[in-house]
Every structure is written in structure tokens, then in C-alpha cells.
Length: 408
Image 1 (spheres, helix red, strand yellow):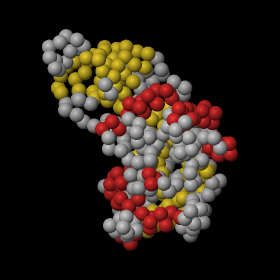
Image 2: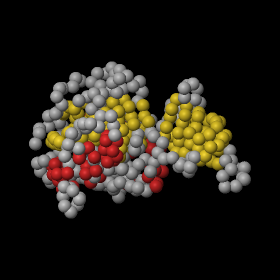
Image 3: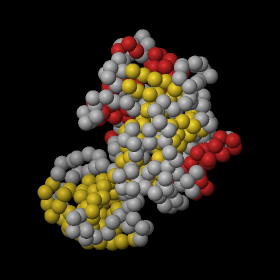
Image 4: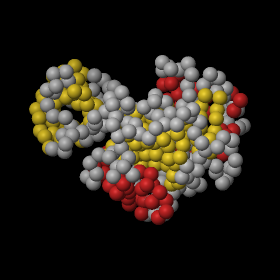
């Protein structure tokens, strides 16, 4: 078994405070749900796959955080990417609960012999030496899976990591710390020349030593991805001891640790999109720069400002029309606005609206449409509520294209 030292060929210099435009790091979310994947219609906007996040370092190296069901979609993406001839990611597994390893047997790059995958996780007291390798074997043992581990022809390397360890991958200095979760869990800090990302899912507050450990891990992070599975009320009562956190605890850590952006992650499988909307709204009432993780969301560091893109989730039946509308909401700076506009791109699920104001991603908008002639000849306006999932500056710089999905 390799030691906890980095397998990178050369050490990386300490990240510089000065970041140029070509020194960027990108995060993409492939799975954001906790405990079990969901396929409910009520969860399609934020997504139903379990934990999997992709970090591309400024050196162009791919780091994968956890191997939940979102890993399958990442594998499909990698198969058709320009660098698919040889895929060599560094994969950090926080712990061995099902929702963080379910995607491993379905990760296509594992079945191609030219690929080389570097795995990192801890030695479990329940599994002993070669814990992660044994997890692989157990997942694909008969009668649980139709083919065994021999079907995976890619080269695999396993490195044991302990809380307090430091290691390097090309483009990032990595720190591991223990979190408070049943059977153990690691949180990871990735320091790059473009900024710092902290990934701390599956943690329950209440252990003073581990709470302090998490605070140190999160200190000054540009992006802090934190467990927000339960509400504060659940965490204090029926879900106490289950190993998870709440948005309120995430906000507390973000404030005290000087975090710039908080990402709420590991959404409960029973939390509908509307429930996550409420959690996001409550969190933003206490801390301005909060994001609710959504599948397909991309966050780019190293530019003048953090760039966040949330893709339009689903296409509906499109209607070519010309609707006058009144839109109210909050700008990116938190200022209330009301604006009249015209909507010509409307589906059953959302709309593309052109505004003079620029609202914040994931903020709520109220849209009042003149009677669109749906369901009768009533002259009453149609009142809708939606959340901003896309913002694009128009070429003339006077308007912003705002994509929203309707929640009611």
C-alpha cells in the first residue's frame, strides 16, 4: 500500500495571492443529494444523484470528490472529452457509506486499460488495511454485482490518508481533517493558485475537537462546500446523531472562519426543490454569498469575481409569443427592483427574460404576465414565481438575459 505522500512528480509552490486570467480552477457538481439517489419530479431542479464533485486545478488536473451516483454521468462525459485517450484523475473518497461509493462500478473509465486512477481515502477500523480496495471488491462480489473486479482493466493506485495529513496533486496542496460522522469521514481542503476549496460533507456539529478541526479546515476558503442535509429543527430532535449538519451551522462556520462563498450540499432525499429553495432563502437571510448545490452547476475561481453558471435544467413545450410582463426581485447587490419587459421565449417550466437589472443566481423573481390566453379569455394576469438559473450579459451591455424556472 502506498504511503500518504503525494504521487505527483514535483512539489507545487505555495499558491500566490496574485491570480492571472489563465490561472483558473473550476468546480462542477455531478451529484448533490445525500443518503440515496432520487428520481422524484419534485427534485429534478437541484438533482437526484448522490455526492460527486469535479475540481479542475489550475494545472489542468482533474480531482474527483466522492463517488456517488453522479460519478456515472461524469464518466460518460469523460468518455467523449478531447482528452479521453488517457484519463488520470485523482479521486478522494470521504468515507465508505453507500451514497459516496455507489457510482464506482458504473464509472466507465475504470473499464479502459489505458486509464490510470489515483484513489485516496482512510483506513477503516472495520475494514483494516487496503480499506478502499476492499470496498471495491465487496461492491462487485457475487451475488451483488454481475461482474467482478477483474472486469476493471484500468490501472488503480490507492493511497491511505489520515486526518491531519498534507499531500499534493498537480496544481493543489491538499489537507485532510477528520469530521464528526458515524464510522469516520474526512474533509478536504484544496489550496490552488486560483483560490481555496473546502469539501466538508457528512459532518455533525457538537464534538468540540472536531468542530475546531472543521473551523481550521474552512479558514478563509473561497468556496466552502458543507453538509446541509437537515433543518436546524431536525438536527436538534429527530435527526440528532445521524452525522449531518444544517444550513444554520454552515452559516455559523462560514462567518467565523471568514469564508467567501458557502455551498449547501448533500440535500436530503426527502427535501423537494421547494424545500431547498426555503433553506437557501433562510441561509441568504444570514449570509449573503450562499449557493445551493445543483447538478451541472459550475463555479470558476481565478477571475476578477467568482463565476457561477447554473444550466437550464429541462426544456418544456415552447410557445412562440410576445407577452408583456412585470418582473420584481433583488439585484446581485441586494437592491429591490421592479421592471417591465417582454417575454418571447416561454416554456411550461421556465422562461428567458431580458432585463436591465442583473439579479443574483438562485434568487427568487416574481413574474406577472399579461393574460397569455391560456385556459380561457379571462383578462386576469398570470402571476408566477421562479428562481434564476442562468444569467448572460447581452452584447450591447444594456440588457441581461435571465433564465428562470417556475416553481409555481
